[in-house]
Length: 384
Image (cartoon, rainbow, N blue to C red; front, top):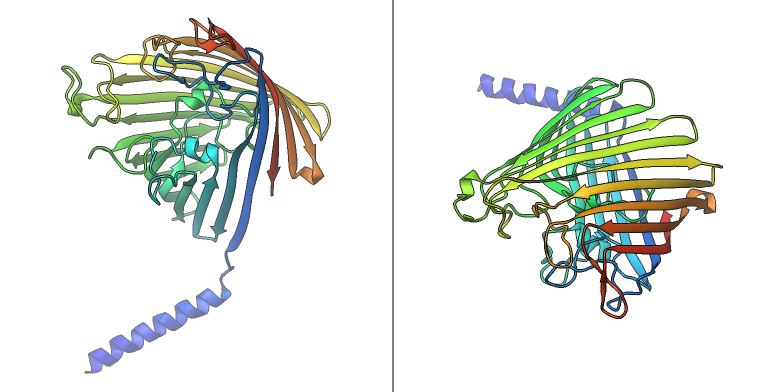
């Protein structure tokens, strides 16, 4: 009996000590933010379908990620993001709504609420436990570490998204750990279900990693990778167990002066066997691309940016194809203005984009095909 009383007393003392500690601990901070965007883009080809996507051999293609409508006003995405941050834990709940939410939730044509509900998507939902000042663990759904651009329109300088972005990945569900060697170097490694899907299509897990370092102030370098097996079935002589998907990515940015900024994204990937039930090559096929970014702030309210990109998918491993459905390559140049108004809450982005494919891709109003397309328009983004 004495042992029981002693144990209860010890537990009460521990509970009281923890309660006293919690009363003196710094409370966590809750923040709520978001944005919405709307746009209009005219197409100089005046396509009969009023689409910026081009053709891919079976109908509509994928020459653009999000701003797909030509000659029409469109709504992009509405985001509502809640973040709770404390000394030992962060929690992020990031919900999106609208047409771009459908597209950003790639791979899930039937959403968590059933058919027709994909316009409501969980963009991110994760918990980060800060084990020490240097080591943290994150579990849940998080945006991919790969690539230069992100889904969030206020973050990207250009409004239309690159082909490197469009060919993924977008997000992952899993567990990752990050260790900061210093404020200029860190390493992340993790295991995820698969690529761009709420539910895993097989029992295998993908490996992700990112090495960050900053050689000098203002220069950031990210070396990113994912190696996974995305197969749902056997393809030709490739068993599902021997299929492979991998992508290696370099992203680097340099703030040359207070007004002039440079960025670079280069990636190469390969695939062998099935990809989530859609089939795939029986031998390893590769793709890759490079995008160069530059922008200059003429004033604190106006800047101009240029992106040049080349993307090669002539092996046909990804979805970027010509009008006949064959693998293709494309060169793109995008010129985007950035105008800030309403105390920073309103962003206006006039933009000219020209895409040139290695073969016929785009339709004209008379139904004939051409290799190139030029669009001109404006996006308006409200953020809070």
